[in-house]
Image 1 (tube, rainbow, N blue to C red):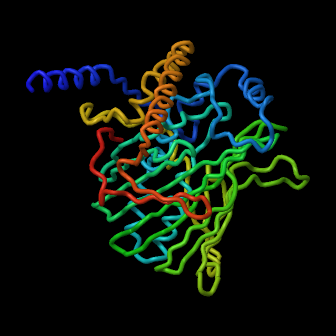
Image 2 (tube, rainbow, N blue to C red):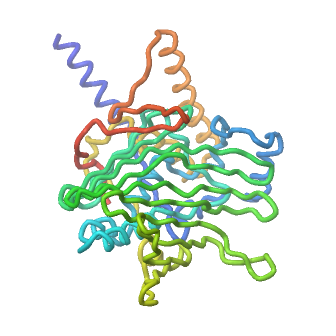
Image 3 (cartoon, helix red, strand yellow):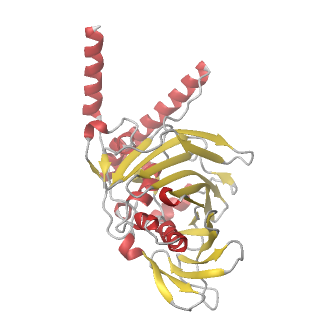
Length: 392
């Protein structure tokens, strides 16, 4: 019995010693670390990737070379949208004096989760059961990859001090249409202001990766935010504005309105750029104010740091992909390919083993289900998220 315990303890220590944790600069207004790791001749390289892909193809199974990976997981990118921000916009939502003030703050926070995406680089596709656990102040965030094919990510965050709870369930559905990759971000986001009994439901804009005629990335589509308790809603459109002759225009534009659901009366109109400033105009008084300033909110963002190395789970994103991120950062592409192949092969073996035994995998922190429309929903198993081993 003692020998078995000693062996298990030895194995645990060996795993801790082998664990490589890599934390990288988040996506920010300036592009962050991703901008420094663009591959040479990126446009030609990206275009060559799609020469053998037919329009209409589902890209969720597409294998990407490490050369086109930014050193972080998609799970981390989702988390960064919540915990990597200079202004504490989220806690302000709960501090609003009335329902309209709180709703307006929720709209600003929703816009703040939109981050620049670098053309030519993509995050790692999270493995099944991968987690990401980070704290910022009194806000604790936990994410888990609850499905690999299709890729579905779940997020749960709680802030007891401000009475806030977040629940996300998101599934990117990327398809190639010949001149661009259109990625629909399916799923919903819930923000609960517990002390006010208010739940805000919203979706995410979709990502468009243009290949022709001019390569680039853009968030587009419509986002709807609604709170049943206050009977308030917002419609926000992400788009590229057009010039007089249909050329040029301003990229990363947003426009929309906040309105009363019962009367459909527009209370505020909003307009601007999500990577610049978004203004709010009161339709009654005509007065305008700044709703959101990206330079203040998502500029010069800092990466999390390790607070508790022993608390970092083997499933943690920064550990799962640590050795690969290390190889990419050092531009050791041979090592990067070997490490990525090892991770992917290990996942394939585990999947085959479960299938041969007739076993089904279930998430550790969430329960989930699919609707008749093939949409995913998830619920956290824990009432609150404990402090994470990584902090901002």
